[in-house]
Amino acid sequence: MQQGYVATSLRGITAKAGVNLAAVNYHFGCKEALIREVFERRLGPLNAARIAHLDKLEAAARGRPLGIEQIIEAIVAPVLHVSKEPRPRGTISLQLLGRAFSEPAETLREILPAQYREVVIRFKQALTRALPDMPDQELIWRMHFMFGTLSYTMTGNDALKLIATCNREDGDDAVAIMRRLIPFLAAGLRAPLPALQIKRSLPGRRAA
Amino acid sequence: MQQGYVATSLRGITAKAGVNLAAVNYHFGCKEALIREVFERRLGPLNAARIAHLDKLEAAARGRPLGIEQIIEAIVAPVLHVSKEPRPRGTISLQLLGRAFSEPAETLREILPAQYREVVIRFKQALTRALPDMPDQELIWRMHFMFGTLSYTMTGNDALKLIATCNREDGDDAVAIMRRLIPFLAAGLRAPLPALQIKRSLPGRRAA
DNA sequence: GTCTATATCATGATAGAC
DNA sequence: GTCTATCATGATATAGAC
Image (cartoon, rainbow over all chains, first blue to last red; front, side):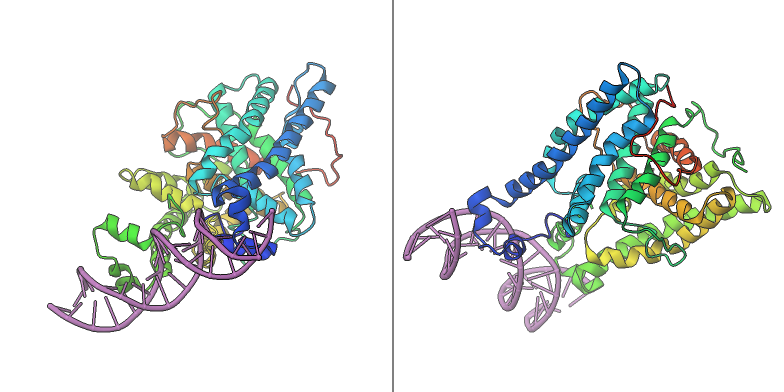
């Protein structure tokens, strides 16, 4: 997934694994089936951990709505667990999962919704309870933005990285990144509702 | 860019363009040079429009800091302009630009920083003035999150799309999406600073 | 089950007639 | 400049020996 699905050849995979070229086709049938199993093996435990985390929070809350930060942390914390796997597997797994939705390969588009289905449903329920005044459509969009930010951050790609003015200090520490990410997302989810009619040029200066 | 760089063959391109297979190599030299010119032709005007928009806002503000929403709109509004180009060019151009950073092709990694350099510098200056109490590192990360959300949203990919519970109404209207996106990002940028030490389980319930 | 060898095909690039 | 024809390469997949 450093190279993307199409650019990654079975020759490269089998060579790095130290096995024969024909092994993939014997054990998995075809290249698609291999990548599908990789995704299931990585995404399955991750999303299961997210749901387990949420279960625990909800059991402890005894019927009260959860806090936004708690809910976001249930999504994010399992990612940190993955990132701590020994190098380079941790980093690459994050790339894999983050890029999954941007990956143009058709076959991924089929398995991802199934993998994420339960997670999305459960977290939408939790967020609906935490934000009772939020219209349904608005919440769905904000969840969309949230997943987008998370995916993009997980890829490790970075529009800003190569700009000289912006040399960051804690580039590799996933925990530090997520510690910054959670307040950002929480504030976004809690943002005041947009006016139904927004004029083309905004008044602004609200932060001055 | 519906298929990604590697999966798009010169045969496919020339066939759709109604020209000869050899035309690309004659006029551009190689496939890489072609995609590079495509990006420059799309990204150049977009980023130029962003800077022009910012210039206009700053001229009107006469030295006062801009509002966060204004700054974000200067980034987002030019995207809307692209999205309004006749179908399917508008939609596909957005995919192209949104996926650019996730695209694994090595050649893109070289030209994108150059294309975005000025934009990042200018907007960082503007945001620094609008958020004077924000530490530099924190601001850079929040800009990173912001670009990530925007890129992901532009791709049109969607983790939530295929989940039955989440059927959205205004799927295709880019203006409506951006109208929702701006308050989300503005709130994220303005979020309270994270505590230096966050305990593993948060107190939560702040939103109840 | 694992290997070698190979079939089949698509790709990017180029040579050379026009 | 534009076309046809072709090259060299590397891809997935499979047949068949061991």
